[in-house]
Amino acid sequence: MAAAIPVSAADVRAIVNLPKEGKIEDVLGQHSPLALSYLARHTEKEYYAEATGTDPGETLAIAFKYAFAFILLQSSLEFLNLSTLGEGIIKTTGIDAQSTELLTFKEIQAYKQQLELRALNQVVDYLNLAGQNRYRELLTGSQTVRGTRACVISGDEEDDV
Image 1 (cartoon, rainbow, N blue to C red):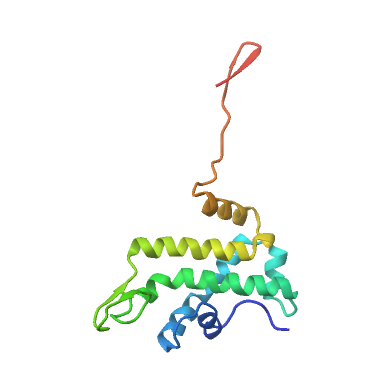
Image 2: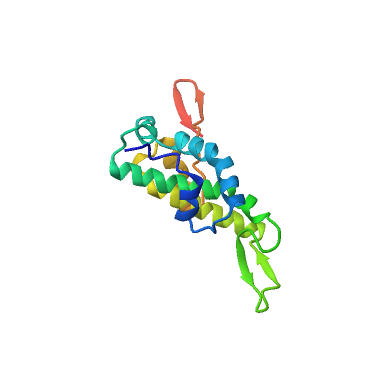
């Protein structure tokens, strides 16, 4: 069996249901290293090594393949949307097919978060601490806060502040 990731741009395009266009595959291909880097940063090293190796387990291979596809789309989304009228991520089309509305910046950002959450959900069993924190942040909408404890020492006793 071949490595689970990287996945070809043509296969990613099919997974995320994008039209068959060379420009789309070109953009996806250019963003492939970013998707690999993202997964390397957010998953445990041994699982990432297995996913990029020559004989990944079937469950792990499926999880990483789909996570890669979702992160690749997330990484390249605004570049697909910047295409000329009639291309990109279309929100609505007019009755006469002459008016086309693409996703707005705010809609793209919300969609990107959903794609990232979906990707992390695919590999939730393989996440490292950074991946778990990001997954939790996307689920709850709040960032992980690292607390600092301070105390005042006066004489022989310690009072928490």
